[in-house]
Image (cartoon, rainbow, N blue to C red; front, side, top):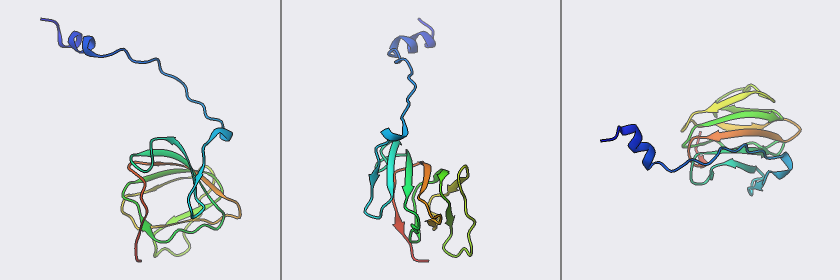
Length: 135
């Protein structure tokens, strides 16, 4: 009898050579929602699974209080934003290079508070949803 490792290797198809993926900024495929928020997918389908995307919000955009059923992880690239619970007073602003994490099911308000659009690189560990809540 062959060792287990040899059996597993014999049953495993050859893996494809890894590739470096490069996507220039002008090749991003932005899709804008009716609210004016634009998403450019990088990995995954945001409507059905965990995803990684660039997100652009117009200056002055303020979300209503809402929750997401998955945790969001973001890195600010342009502009200034706030992410805070609905009862927060004077939430801190974050700008380029700042990291944020919003736990699943935490009511929050996100706002682009700069005079220019806000761009963030976003990972969400589940499908996209936007569930309004009453504060």
